Image 1 (cartoon, helix red, strand yellow):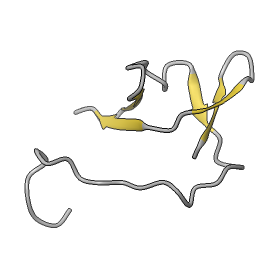
Image 2 (cartoon, rainbow, N blue to C red):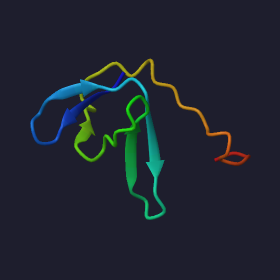
Image 3 (tube, rainbow, N blue to C red):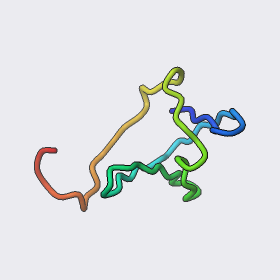
Length: 68
């Protein structure tokens, strides 16, 4: 599971289920599915450490058809 670091305090936290939304202007926002909290406002993902082998991604059923 990915580790997130608080941008202000440096505290680390693991979120087990997140969803990434990409807005029309190209900006991203990540939301914790358990609480509905927007993660990207105060947290950034730690790309240096962590075990990413358990991460899966799937296409939304309402995302249309075909190859992306």
